[in-house]
Length: 199
Image 1: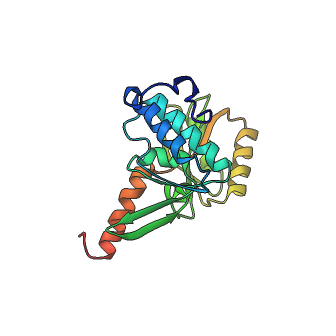
Image 2 (image 1 turned 90 degrees about the vertical axis):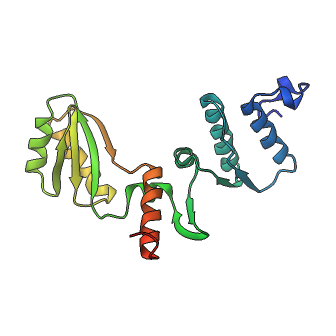
Image 3 (image 1 turned 30 degrees about the vertical axis):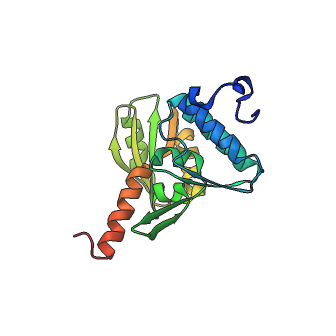
């Protein structure tokens, strides 16, 4: 009850609890015998934003404590924030098994980064033109999207150092990735095309 923050309402009837409190109560009941493995089916369904944040915090604490947690959910954006790995199943067939990060960034050798600068975006374009292994994909109002010839972290980190050393005031630098929902749809299309179920 302490872990799920239900001590103060321990005398209340379950029927009087909010959806979020009810989910925490169910989680607390599942933890009574201190299992090493938990299987949670749609645990965040119907929760308000505050209850979802709290539930994700509890899941991360349980994982940090060494518990293995399987979560079945259609809310994929929440899985990418909670899970170390994802498993996609289509018609009983596993179509992906691996980290959410690898699925979202893809398997390409190159990598696209979103860069924001505290100066005119054209300065980023000029830097990209003069830097081997870097191509400008597009300019944006605050900077641009640039493609590195390699996705390996060391060359990208070195390019960032050179960018800052060249006087570009970088305020944001992050790798662009697909949302988990889009990655899931792409995997389904790929699998169904392979199996002749989608033209």
